[in-house]
Image: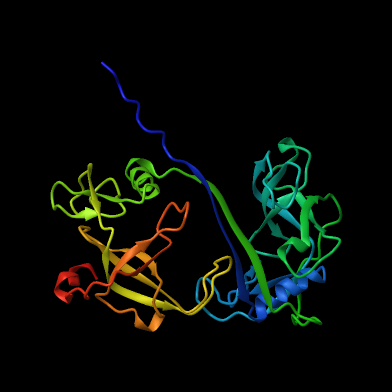
Length: 320
């Protein structure tokens, strides 16, 4: 008997990356500008607790907080975890400890890193001090790290601070990036392989008979596995759509353009795709469309009008 081995599972690296941009209110602006000026600020609540990093509203009462205080650059480790293999972009290139440090005079702890030669040099309760970055710009990285400290005890009380600095930091842009390997599984592997052959294949639920495109391996309504593969399309019907007016980075498509939900013939739900080959203001519900493939493309580049009469609303209303 000849046994056919299962097809090799698909696997591909995937990177999700974007710049996170936000404006700062008076409290966060003062905190980050203070770091640039080598000043660690906290905020006092109505109950007298000192929170660091400072927040604009009391997490217990939701009261607005504005009473800033200056803290020293020393503190105590409250808990820690050792990082033996730093990743790119982390604060230190050599092994370090992630630590929660309660600055002297504060009631909460600040998450940062501690520069020590090994885990045996870290302990809960150890005294540490801020090592300021040589070049500072108004970011949490202005604290280069914490380091062990055995000096004199701090001042007994935090000092009031008006939070006023020259040239305050009013906004931040933080790069966000997630790297991982994606394995689509049996159902979506078959879906992707069919797209590479310029076919669209879904899976039918054995209970409700709905054809899922893209397939999910199970029917979310009936809770049963789906294994029967069904080729659908390639033409379909626009069920609803939106006009995109904001150009995305790294996307070579001029705005405005239309993204639509398209119910492919034979499918039990709509998938989304871009509509091309027609002015954006002529796209309409019920319009019949067909896929357009680019040379070497592994999925349709966009959908265009097929030239057929519009579909009757009753034929796709359940797919909106």
